[in-house]
Image (cartoon, rainbow, N blue to C red; front, side):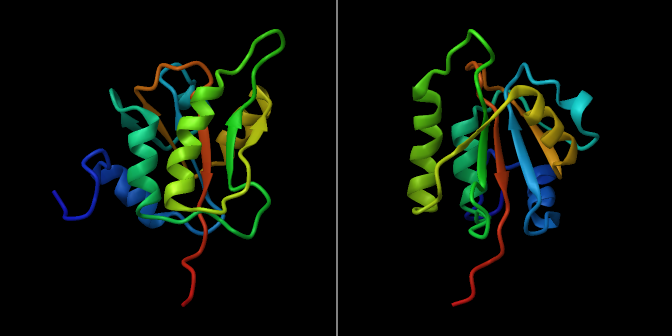
Length: 144
């Protein structure tokens, strides 16, 4: 274990976060997401929900402040609805660690898949809530 790094952050995920450049995207996919069909770099986080992963990841990287939407989620399909508590639980973590982050963008399912193909990596989580997928765009380290 490393001091200050959440135990949900595996060595493989830590390596990916380190190697990502600003503007690269990381997909945190729910347990039902076709991660291996969409991206060749898949990191397993079986049994781990998105909220603890968000907390661990966002304590190590910042979100891209130079784009309108550094965070995106999959929009509900036709005739389906989103559970607002899912976005609210993600937003609570984002607002605590990176206050002032713009609203979460909702992306059509197939556009989300296309974006996943271009992402740096996909983290396959143990999340089981419907539409539990989220994309994070890594930013540059702010200069003080």
